[in-house]
Image 1 (cartoon, rainbow, N blue to C red):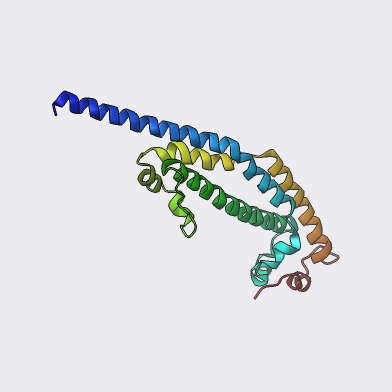
Image 2: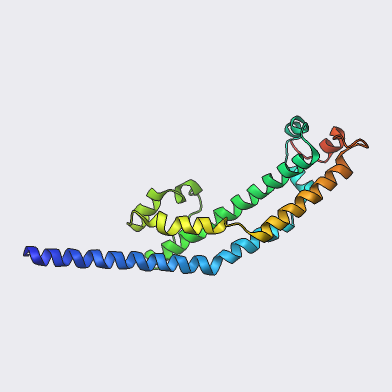
Length: 195
């Protein structure tokens, strides 16, 4: 094979590879546009269903007692932020696994790589995606924007957070504080199921 034929073949291969990657980037962008609302809808639904007593049942009462030097509103904010972190973490795990399945189906002709049992950390590493797709910038150009789309400021999420902060503050004052608005450790401890 002459050198000009080899150059043409190499150039053609690079062009096909770049087109394949661009198509995959476009497909992921469309997938995110079509499915991101599901993420946000699920997030709002979980936020609306947050319940103070359910959250308290998952807490270690002795750690809570150590924290009771904070104000009621600070304590409510801690509980809401902690619950919101768990909601975001669970939904994000599902979101990134769904994207991984989508990419696997797309590049492997509908052969699914089941991400179960694989740590989320592996899916968030550029090296994982470079090896999987064969394109070094794939993480930066496709996966990072998909991840960021989950956590763009959501006005409805903020409204729900504020409502829960106010509601939890009122519930804590009504149910777990004495007449002088000091924490009633015995009442608070009885509301928690922890072993």
